[in-house]
Every structure is written in structure tokens, then in C-alpha cells.
Amino acid sequence: MNKGEGVRELGKIEEANEKAVKKIMEAKPTVIGIKKARDVIPGTKEHMLLHAGPPITWERMCDPQRGAVMGAAVFEGWVDTPEEAAKMAERGEIEFAACHDHDSVGPMAGITSPSMSVYVVKNEVHGNMAYCNLNEGLGKVLRYGAYSEEVLDRLRWMESEMAPLLAEAFKRSGPIDLVGIMAKALHMGDELHCRNTAASLIFLKTMSPHMVETGFDGKIVSRVMEFMGRNELTFLQLSMAASKAMLDAGHGIDYSTVVTTMTRNGTDFGIRVSGLPGQWFTAPAPKPKTLFFPGFKEGDEGGDIGDSAIMETMGLGNFACICAPAVVQVVGGTVKDAENFTREMREVTIARHKAFTIPYMNFEGTSLGIDIRKVVETGIEPSINTGVTHKKAGVGGVGFGLVRAPMDCFKKALRAFVEKYG
Amino acid sequence: MREPARFLREPKIINVGAKHFYDDLKSQGADTVHVDWRPPAGGDREMADLLDKLKKL
Image 1 (spheres, rainbow over the protein chains, first blue to last red):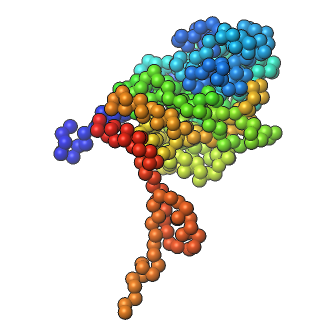
Image 2 (image 1 turned 90 degrees about the vertical axis):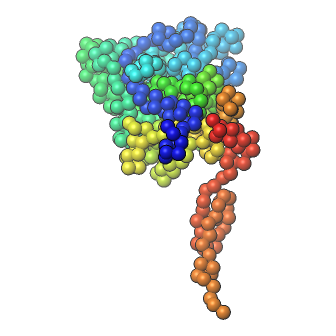
Image 3 (image 1 turned 90 degrees about the horizontal axis):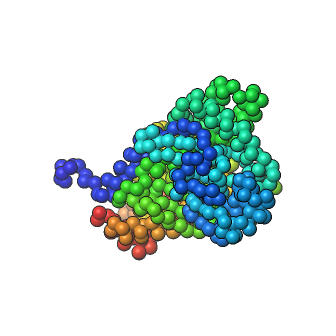
């Protein structure tokens, strides 16, 4: 390119960012099966639990995440009671690691234990993998910090019936294209974070004939189909794993200021940046502005938690909330708010997705590529819609809400970026 | 003496930055629009300097 001939010469950052969003957009995540976490997630060990958010110790872990740890330790058979599990963690006998540092994502507390089944997602273009456990539904569930017998029984059932059936069904279905399902669902009222209703039904429809063909007992097939059909968040795990696989394809590009992870563990909010691999930039996790389920009130909510902000990092979720007018009420807003959020997030991103489009905005592409420079310069913090846990372990979900990614994460990342490249 | 131009009698006001000036004008019936402008990095000098450094890359 020559200057003065009407062609703009790209700076190193712009060139790197173009490369990053190109790789994210050309990625093709497909779900290829279900396996036990210990058999596929790299770097996992016995007595190791993966968790949502940036890395954290037991001492600094929030109550709902501790609750999920306690439940998972009983589920694994490491101890008999949640109380013993807490003591085991206090003694340092459970190793903790961030899902994101192990090619994985986990919604809410995000606790993923070695015996849990995970979806195996492969980016067919770049070859990288992503993993996410199976969705348990809403309310009293492990990912919201609940650990009662009812919660553990459901997890055991998912391992004994649901996962084996789906694993066999995947052998018959072959790889399933996730971008296709997500793109379609955005046109059917999902934004793919708090609302995965359409995507879950498309996935169930896709898997149904293969589940029937497995030859499993009809009652098992019926129970699994009923469970997946009733749970409107069945597909959330696949939306997340697909987004993780796509964003990881754009991670580790020198000079790129594109954010490839936003996540929270209830104590800290953390981001990762493409050009700064191996580094986390954190700030205290804010409390979501919550619309509560009946029976819960302001003050019950815990800190912002979950790897599911990978959806907003991908330009979906609250970045695309105008696709899902029905979800706006659930998080306590109006349709106009949804449009405003979607348009506002244009200010902090650098591209528009080619496959993910917004019917309400004349089929413009969803925003893609949060740029730390734009966030700091404009003062606009990325907006996220989210499930909300009770602040205490053992209770579960209390509602849905809205939250902003703290500016301090982006300021710290900018300092580190200038130190490395400036 | 000539009448002042209409735009001087009925000012049209563009408010830039702090929105409460716009809200006050609007509540008094003024013909006004608001421009949502903030200084780069919210006026944080350190951040503005860092952003400037990156513009040279």
C-alpha cells in the first residue's frame, strides 16, 4: 500500500486487530461429542476443580462458588458431606484452576469436576478445542451454588442417563455446526446468553432422531428429551463453548487490542486480551442490577459470576439483546433499552459479524471485537446480561440482571499493552 | 432599528457534555439538542497519554 494514493496504511494495531477478528469470524465450531472432563480437558488432574472467572484461591472464593465446590467434591465421592468438602478445601487438598486456562468455560460458578461429562467442541478451521459441562436447568442447581441431595441426584442422573445417550447420539449425528444454529436462533428471539430458547429447541430437534436410533430404552430417551425440552438453557453451554472456540482462535496475536475473554468468579471480574496472552486483568466483581424471582429481594444477590460473559465478548448476549425482546423484561428493561444497549456497544467494538445478524436493525451484523482502547477512550463499559446467584452458598439462583464490565480491567490491560508494545 | 434575526429571538441551543444543562433548558421549553460528549478517557490524563502513545504504532 502506498500513502497518498487514497489507500490508508494500517497501523500495527489495526492490522493485528483485523487479523484477530478475521480468525474469530472464519472459525467453525462444531460439537463432536460428549466425554468425561478428565479424559479430554488438557491439564486436569484428580482432586482438581475448574471454576468460572479469573484464577482464585479457596480463601478469596465467594460463597456460591464455594457451595458448588462442596457439592462437586461430594459428587466425586472425595468426601461424604459438604462440610467435609469445605475442610478438604481449607486444607489445600483441592486444586483450583480457571476453566478459561484449560480451554473450557463454565456458566455461573462454573465448577467442572473430573467425572462430569462435557461437550467436546472443535473449531474445524483452526483445530482448537473448547469444552463445557451440561446444563442442569434453573433454580437449585450446582452452578448457582446449591449442593443439596436434590442437586446431586440430578447430576448423577445426568451422568447415568443423559450423557451416555447423547454420547451415542453424537456418534450417529456426526459433527453439528454450531454457528448455523446460533445464527438461526438470533432470528428466532434468542440473544444466546440469558435466552437460548430457540437454540435449545433446534438442538433438541437435531439430536432427537439420533437419540431414538441409539436403541436406548424408550423411557430413558423420553426422560432425556423431556429434560432437554423443558430446560430453555440447554444450549447455553454450547453457545458458550462455541464462542470460546471462536474467540480463542483470535487470541495470542501480537499487537492486537481485541478482548478475547470477559469473565467473573463472584469476587473478581477478569479480562484477557489477544496481544497479551497469559495475563489476566482484574477488578472487583460488581453486583448485578437484578430483577428477582418471587421470594427474593434486593440484598440477596451475590457478586457477578460466570464464564457466560464469553457471549458478550463474542458480541452476543446483551450486545445483541435487541434480537431478544422477550428477554428484556426478564432482566428488567424495555425494548428501547435493548436497542440502546446494542447500538452503544458499537462504540467499543471494531467489526460486525458476517454470520450473526440482527433482523430488527435491517440485518446488520452483531458487534465483534471489543477494543480495550475504545473502552478506555469512550468510558463505555461493556454491558452484560446475566443470571444472578444468592450471596450465600446452598440457595441457588435469585433472578436475572444487568451488569457492566469494570473499567479498571481495561485500564490495567492498556497499561500492560503500552508496556509491552509502546 | 431592525428586528433581530429570528434565530436570535428564539435561540436553538446545542448542549455538549454535561446533560443536566440540557435537561434544565428542556424543562423551560427551550429548543435544544444534546450531544453526548465526554473528554477522551473521561479526562484521565494517564490513560489519554497511553492512548496517544498507541496512535503512533
